Amino acid sequence: MTRHEEQGDGGRQAGRRSRVLKAAGLTLAAALVVGIGTAGWAYWHLNDNIKSVDIDNALGDNRPAKAVTTPSPSGSASASPLPTEAVNILVLGSDSRSGEENQALGGGDSSGARSDTAMVVHIDAGRTTATVVSIPRDTLVTRPSCPLSDGGSTAVAYGAMFNTAYSVGGPVCAVKTVESITDVRMDHYIEVDFSGFAKLVDALGGVTVTTDEDIDDDDSHLHLAAGTHHLDGTHALALARTRHGIGDGSDLGRIGLQQTLVKALLEQIASTDLLAGPTKLYKVADAVTGSLTTDTGLDSLAELMELGQSLKGLSAAHLKTVTMPVVTAPSDPNRVVAQEPAASELWASLR
Image (cartoon, rainbow, N blue to C red; front, side):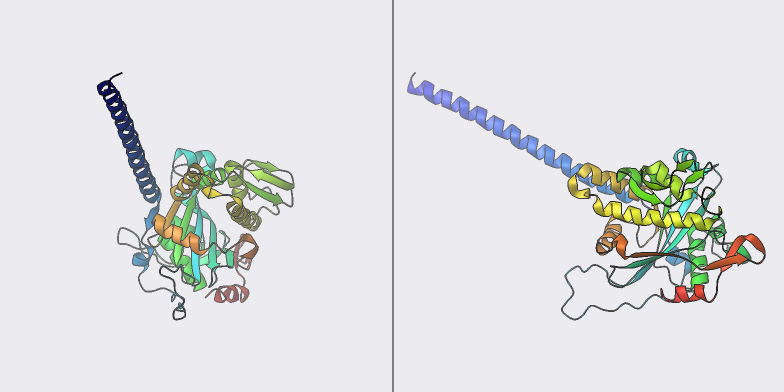
């Protein structure tokens, strides 16, 4: 082989290597573009999932005072410190009547929604301990006049069932009613619907709960023997809705199951390695954001992530669950009213 031929052959090999490297570079560049684009789309999708209501603007200044925030000691604050002050969040479980998924899970017809689960979540300063106070939906309260989106307002109602606040005035009236009966400022509002809750449990791989008695409830389609069970989303939701298959069939028995479920969910989240794979992380994030309606202070992925990160020191062991003290209503044996002074003392401890 001549020198010229060797040079030609080397030149062809160099050319091939150049083309291969160029192709590999373009492939890598394309992969990076697709990856970045996919991540961008995923973030946009998760952000767009979240629905919100501007409760602060709707209610104005006629509300309980915000808790006083203690500033960080001089020189101890980091560049982007996570919030550590106490916070109160009204969490509602929405018995939605719209959408095929919600109807299939027991949401009923398509004419509205109810808030059959109401919890005031008080997270202490430092965010490592919390108290969850359940408000029975059958509690008779004075429902205040609430602003409506059309500029009007609802009338004051005396001796109204607590959960009618959501029915007549949505999240705004639910928050105003809770603040009216507790004199505690709700810093945030979170609403979770039927289908979203079931999807979240499934995305986490189910949830393990222990029941102290047999549950046989045809209304919620749940039939469980006493003991420990690992439930999928549909059965976990049925547990949250179960009422007639336990105890005396009142809402108080259901509240006990819901509180057990909240602790079990916290334990499941803590034991799940969400960073093990992007698919699982995305599935959980999609389930969470897709099921939420929040106030405008939590209506972005960044704000929700900041709240979640600030609670990383909170475990189920440091979560206290209680029910607002109630007694049977004198006017109706199927309803309850706040038991005083115990109820007022409980709310005062959360201010």
